[in-house]
Structures are given as C-alpha cells and as structure tokens.
Amino acid sequence: MELGPNVTTILQGERTIYLVGTAHISEKSVQEVRETIKAVQPDSVCVELCSTRYESLNNESRFKNLDIFQVIKKSKVLFVLANLVLSSYQKRLGDKLGVRPGAEQLEAIRVAKEIGAELVLADRDIQATLKRTWRNLSLFNKAKVFNLLIESFFSKEEISEEDLERLKEKDHLSEMMSEFAKVMPQIQKPLIDERDRFLMSAVEDAPGTRIVAVVGAGHVEGMVRYQGQGADRAALSTIPPPSRWVGLLKWVIPALILLAFYFGYREHAGAGLKEMIFAWTLPNALAAGLLSALVGAKPLSVLTAIVASPITSLNPTIGAGMVVGLVEAWLRKPTVGDMERLGEDTMTVKGLFRNPFTRVLIVAVASTIGSALGAYIGAAYVLSLL
Image (cartoon, rainbow, N blue to C red; front, side, top):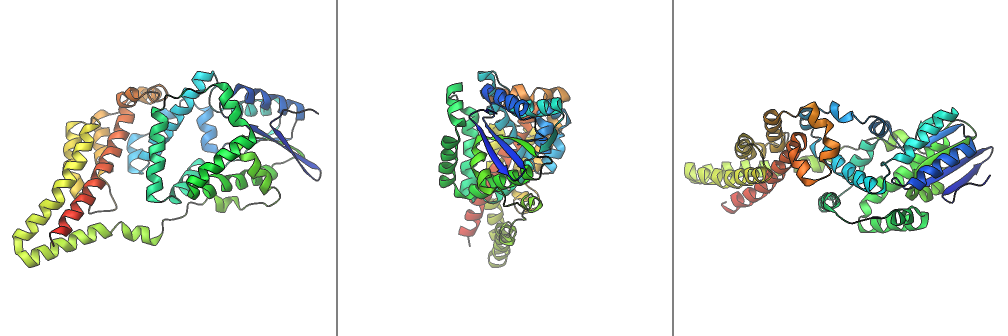
C-alpha cells in the first residue's frame, strides 16, 4: 500500500499506526488525509482536537453562546480576546489560500464517519495547554507572547501555498519549533513535549489494530520519540495552582501602601496621610482613565476607571478591568447579532473596535493595564515620601 510522503508508519506488534503530518491550512493536507484514511480503512481515526476545539470547528454559531458578563466575571477577558485574534489570523491565511483553518481535521472526521471508523479526540484540552504554558512563563516572556499576538494580528505579510507546504516538511518545522523553544525555553515542555506525549498516548490507546492519526507535522517527530512510553493524561491535564509566593506577592504592594498610610498618619498626622493618599490616587486614576479613554470607552466607564483603580489596586481579589468591563458591557449591551459578526469583525482593527463585544474586551484589558501601571507609579511615589 503506497501512502503519501507525510505519512509515518509505526509498527507495534499486531497494530499499525499511521501518523499523517499536516499543515492546518493546506488543501494538499486535506487531500492526503482523505486518501490515507480511505486506503488504510482504519478501525480508529484520531484527530488533533479536544472536545472544545471539536465543538469550535463544528459549530460556527458558537459565539452566540458567549455571555460577556460571565467572560468578565470569570476573568477570561484576555483568554477570549487572544483566541479571537488567533482565529482571525488563521482565517485570514485560510481566505488567501481558499482553505478553512482545520479543514484537514474536519475531513478526517467526515471520512471516519463515512467508513464507520471510531473517532478519537486525541488532544489535550486547549485551556489546559494554554494555562499550563502561561503559568510556565516569566512576566517578561508573558509580555513577549502578548506582543507576538498583537504583531500577528497587525501583520500584513503575504504567505503562499508553496511557503505553507514547505513549513509542512517535518524536518523544517521541527527545526523551526526547536529554535522557538530555544528563544523561549519555558514553553518547550507544556506546549510541545507534553502535547506530543499526550497525543501519542491517546493514539496508542485507540481501539483496533489499524489506527490513523491526523496531527500537525510539527508533532510527528516528538510523538515517534514518545511511542511505547505511555502517559498519565489526567495529570498532564491538571492546571497547577500558582505558587504561594505568587499569591503572597499580590498582597505586597497593598500591604506596603497601607503601612505607608499608617506611618504617614502617625508621623505627620493628617497632612502626611493626605499627601500619601493623593500620591497613590492620582497616578492610579489618571493611568486607568487615560488608557480606557484612548480605546474609546464610554464616558461613564472612563469615570469608573478613575474612581475604581485606586481602590481595586489595594484589593488583589478584584481588578479595575473587571469593574470597568462590567460597566462597559452594561452600557454597550452586545447582542446576538454582534456575536454572529465576530468572525468577520475580528479580521480588521476597525472591526474589532466597531463590534460592541470586542470593544468591551479591549476596554477591560486597557483599564487593567492602566491600573497596573498606575499602581506601580503610585507605590513608588508613596514610598518616596516616607
């Protein structure tokens, strides 16, 4: 049986596993997936999807179910906004090449149903992957990743199908991912190694003697390396809690500021305390209010940022972005129609700001950043008065 150039065959006793390395936006990958599954007639077809991403690919109206108030209350603003930016970037590439992002996974699902093969969602839950990766990054590298997300959205770089197919070559893509891991080694384990191990373990546990697994080409080399080793997939899906030091650190600035207020009052009576309160309040209010205004927040939201930031900065359990975001959401009242337009509106900067749903997210993020900057400046100002 002759298979395509991007199929890796693994023999395990009576079982045979066929790893199809794909590019996620490539018509050639779609064709190779279809031909491989029909040629092999597998008992199981494994796809590089978790239940969340499976639902996302198969339910184009999923945005209708987004509740902006719950997104803000559950502190998922940055997560949702980042997902929208990444989705729009993939969609722009797909539109240029005439291929829907994830089309090869959808084709694998379709053909698996057609031949009656067992469908296995082999990937780790996307939120577990993102959260484990995020927890593993330093503050500096979190800023770098955020910057890369912004750059990817504003990028106008053209990419041809020839360039995309070159990325699909296993050696080239593995080398590229290795270089990226060298630049930011903290992501190597949670984003690459853990997923390779998880995917290989799920594929090996798939029922039947003939298994076809459709995965991104960059995973193939790592999966081959981890074959036969097994994995505790439940442990790999656990979100590690933040360290105690991180939890304590959130209270350091509030504690220092409150202590400074106390000493200011004790040493200089009311005059000293008033000066310190002013030193804390002014930069907090100005920074949060200014950044909210710059992204087009409603006047009441800007006022809320000005009032809330000096207070929320002293309470690590609630951020200014949550308060301001809820006010902005109440004022803009995103509709189901706004949710349905997210796919189109997130394709451009103008659309991001035009859509009430994404405007609320942007305002929440901006006020959070402004409040954080104001808190650092205010803390330095207050401590300098001691």
